[in-house]
Amino acid sequence: MSVTPLHLSGSLTVDEAAGVLAAMRAAIDAGCCEVRLEQLETVDSSAVATLLAARRHALQKGVDLRFSPPSAALAGLVGLYEVGALLGLSKP
Image 1: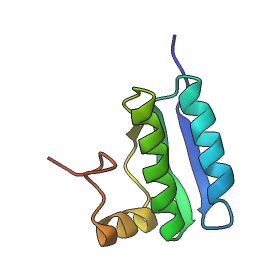
Image 2: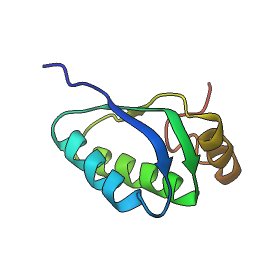
Image 3: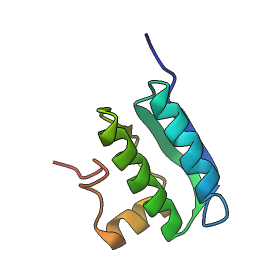
Image 4: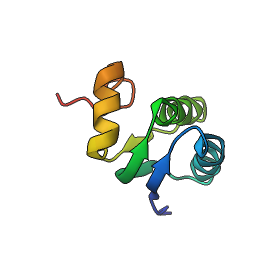
């Protein structure tokens, strides 16, 4: 069974975080193991927290959740908070 990756785009800020996390959890529960991040344009620290919560949910379900390379805006926050390894985004 092949499950389409979940594509996040536009904004992921405190205003969208709860809804995006719910969508990510539902996608993970349905078998999704990839989230595309390159089209996120507007982010704040809630984006990082949301991705970490989704990763934690996936681990609890035994899913190896993968994130595509993040947009420049998100990459800046991931680097600032030094969570690339936790999200599987660190380059070897």
